Length: 160
Image (cartoon, rainbow, N blue to C red; front, top):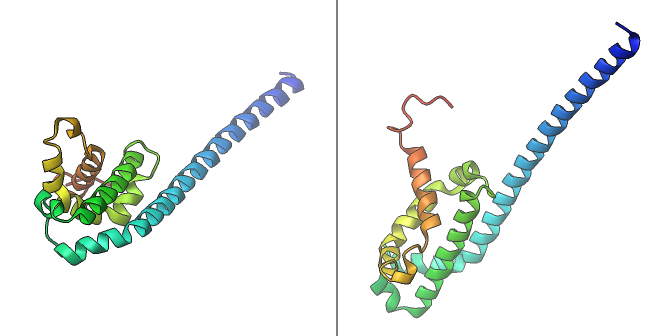
């Protein structure tokens, strides 16, 4: 075996290792950026919705929100649409893999479940309109996914 062949093989091995290390560093950087953008987007979104959500808490406390409630309060209907639309956009990002599901689940999973439950009577009512049957489906799917991951019966014996 010639020295040139040994040097070429050594260079090939070093190149392969460099490629693997570069790929791993890229993957870790991508994950970090995804988590960072998830936190930043969620923080900005909830900050913008703070006043709208405070109105609901003042008016309805912890009660579910119905169509009748919102029809009698035009401002609350506008706020409900803004809140649900914002969480629908967040859900699209999570469901599409743009935002980090695990981080959203840890940061706000319980709140998302509560929020969807609270608005579910209103969502069910607007879905009766043939043109709105898919309204807030992404939000619903995200909440279902969170509930499934938190169901102890489904995760019994799962090692994480």
